[in-house]
Length: 150
Image (cartoon, rainbow, N blue to C red; front, side, top):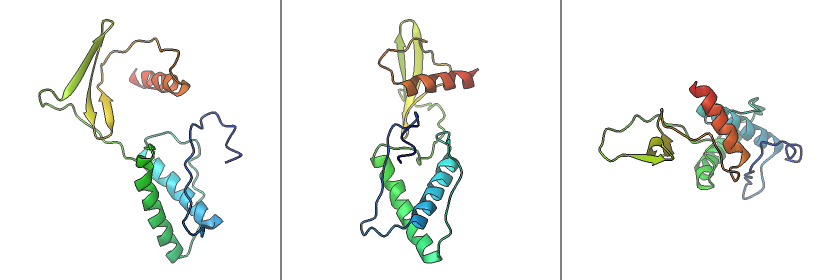
């Protein structure tokens, strides 16, 4: 982690440890490789390091690490990290009152609550002005979204 500290994209770190401190370097490499593999498959975020460094483990150790990985996948959303939460595509619901509309400053946006959060529908309008309090990642995300929309 010391090597990664200088990277500007780091916002948070979540560390997992075993209760009996029996994780070896090979176990950690295996888990790192599997986490990168899962995050790449889900595709919620663009990964800068997508090279799996997975270690070869004996079958029993591999099964133990898969159980450990399952626990990690269960705990991450509880800790507010959605990197391993699959994105679900939602169609606009036809149910009356299921979508919400916001009209402000002559602009209108429509969206809907989903199990993954709030989805803003295509063709919703936004202001190009960001508040000074907006964190840099919000600006970057908006810029990326506007590029993909055109």
